[in-house]
Image 1 (cartoon, rainbow, N blue to C red):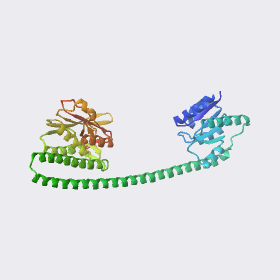
Image 2 (tube, helix red, strand yellow; image 1 turned 90 degrees about the vertical axis):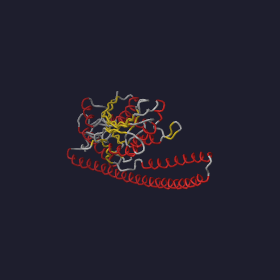
Image 3 (cartoon, rainbow, N blue to C red; image 1 turned 90 degrees about the horizontal axis):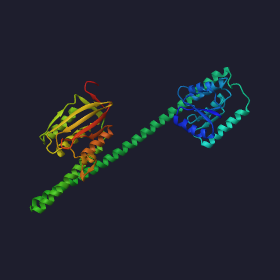
Image 4 (cartoon, rainbow, N blue to C red; image 1 turned 135 degrees about the vertical axis):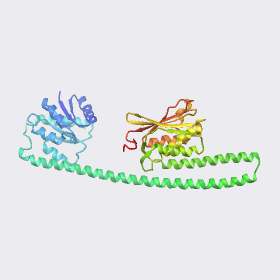
Length: 391
């Protein structure tokens, strides 16, 4: 059986070559770089070699040069199969080194099989020949080799520069689109707020002249709708700012303390923070996460009187824990608590929390026991947290 040595550092490319050659009754020997190929060929020379060029340890050009300098291997046909070195000068250099064929990836299975068969047949008809490059040509070969590598490096640098330019242009387009969207949102929100303000004025006039119970009930419902609209406007502004803030180290205990201070003015509630100087690297909008967690405990916890924040370390991450002593979350509601619409009622607060944390590379889950209070766990990956004094 004809033995073919295939050389490529990409496992998928090796697999594709094997899947093409084996059905044609070729024995296939894979190698991952030029050095490994030389070692395998030295132990048991193949009937033909197909090699990539761009590989670690030893590339295809150096493999070809050594192949043609080896007395046992020099007459074995060598096919260069590359997707990276595509310049005509690359092909000319490979042929000068002694390649029998220079073909570009990818090739159809039938085409590649035909080329292999033709190369084998041509090799059988050819008389053995000495290496094409005499010792005196080594300096010229090295010069051409360096020229090929420099040309490839130059192209890679140019490609990288083009990618950077395209990336910057895409960033500018995105920034412009965001500015337009932000402006539209601001203008729309302001227009709605102006209309709501005017509407409140008209309602005040109606309340002044209409004192009957039916009118009061209707006006009360209108005011509820107005408050809902104002709440939506505020939420829209919050969501609009998500991911736009400058990342910085946020002292968690200070951020929580500020939010608790705001809430304690309206509600009788105590808090405990055992965080030992914990800091999180994220958008300052994280303050709204703590606000929403505290607000959720107060609004939906029944008779919540205490909220605590603590943490525990796990491999590769830190878990920030928020617990309260309220009624907890019923099992049937747990799957929906982070949805924007849950049970027919708007639940933007926890939806915002989840979305913000996801954009920040963090996750949140609720693990509390119904009847014993809610427990939220925020998973913060390694590198995004530290303790003050350890920076």
